Length: 538
Image (tube, rainbow, N blue to C red; front, side, top):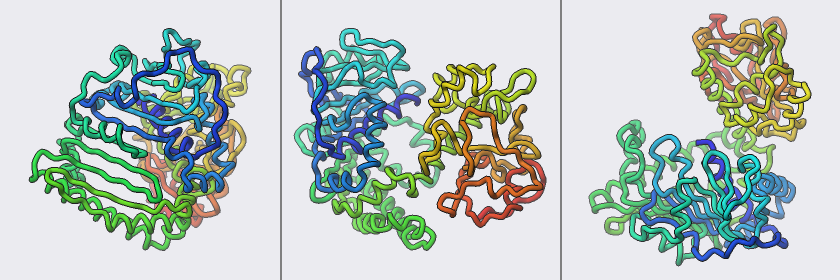
C-alpha cells in the first residue's frame, strides 16, 4: 500500500483541510482542450461496488466556522496550502468535490491500488502542472491520459474534472456511467445525488476479507455484528451545527438487535474512555487546550444511542459548529508547538522502527550506523540505508553508495530529505534531522557492523534505538552520537517544552520520556547487553 494512502489522503486533505478553508477564489489557468464531462462523478460509481466516499468541499467554502479558522491561522494555513499546491499543482480553493470508490474491496497485495479518485474543480486547472510529484518520468498526456507511478493513471476528464485510477479500470471508466445500477450501495448513491450532505460514505461489509471476522481478537468480538451488516452508510453535514448519522442495514430484526447492542456498547466504552481522559490530571495538563472540545464530545457520546427502525439500526449525533471549539483542534494540525507535533514525531519514530525491523528481516541484522566503504570509512547515514523501507526507493536509487555524503552527487540530495526525518516541533535547518542514535560502547548501533536482535540480551523493550536529539545533523551524514558510559548523556535528549522526549525502543514501541529521568537510567536503556535490570522509565 504505497501510492493508495498518498492519493486518498491527499484528496481528503485537499478537500477537508484546504478547500473547506475558503480562500478567496482566484482566476484559473487557461481551459483544457478536452471535451466537457457529460457523466457526473457519482454516476460512475457502481452500485455493487465495495466502498465509495463523496465530499462536497465547495459547500463549506464560506461557512462562518471555517472563516474564523482562516482568520485565526493565516500563516499556518498558507504554509499548508503551499505544500499541497506543490504536490498537486492545483490551488486547493478550486476544489468543488471529491469522489472516491473501490469497485471491489482489496482482498490481496496490489488490490489496494485498484480504485478511482475523481476531483471536480470550480475553475479550470492546468493539465501540464497537475500532480507533478506522482507522474512517471517524462510522462505526457496521450488521448487525455497521463501515466503516473506504479500502474496508476491520470485521466484529464474535462477542464474542471480529473481522475486518478488504476490502469485496469480505464476501459470501464471510458464507458461513462457505471454498468451496475443495483446493489448494496444504491440507496447511498441515490441519497448522495439528491441530498446536500457534505460527506457521504457507504460500505458493503460482505466484501471485507473473511479473516476480519474469523480471526478477530476477543476484545473485538462484541462489535462484529456491525461488520456483518448488509450495508453501512455514514453521512455528515456542517450548517449551524455539525450533524452526523450512521445506518447499519441488517438482514432481519434479530441481527438488528445484535447490531444495536454492539453499537451502544461501543458508545459505552467511548464514554468510559473520555471519562478517564477528562478526569486525569496529567491528561488535563497535557491536553488543556483540547479539553473544551473533548468535554463537548463527551456530552455527545453520552447522548448518542443507536435505535432500531425495523431491520435498520440508526445513530445520530450533533455537535455545535463553534469556532471556539474548532480552533484548538485546528491548532493540533497546523501549529507544530502543540501536542500534535509530539504525536507526529511518535508516528515518525514508529515508521523508522518498522523500517529497521523490515531491514533486519531481509539482512539478518539491523542497519549499521553508517554505510561504509570497503576500508570501513563511513560514507552515508543509516537513514539512507532504510530509505527503501519507508517508501523512498526512488530517492535511494539516486544515491551513489560508494561516495561520501558530501560528494558532488550525494550533497545535492540533502535537500530532498523525506518529511519522515523532519522534527515537527520547529522549522529546523533545511536538510537536517534530530532523529539520531548512539553508537559504540554497548549501544545497539555500531558504525560498521549491524546488530542482530538476538544480541540485545537486555530485551528489545528495554533498549533504546532512536531518539529526539538536542542537536541536529544533515540527514545523510554518518555523524551519530558516540556513547560514553562515563559521561553525562541527558544533555543529548531534546525535551519538548522542557517536559518530555520521544524515544523509539527496540520492540518498535515509542515512549514519551519525562525530563525527570536520571542519567543512570538513560545509560541502562542505551546499553543492549549490560545485564542490569532497567527501572521503570518515567
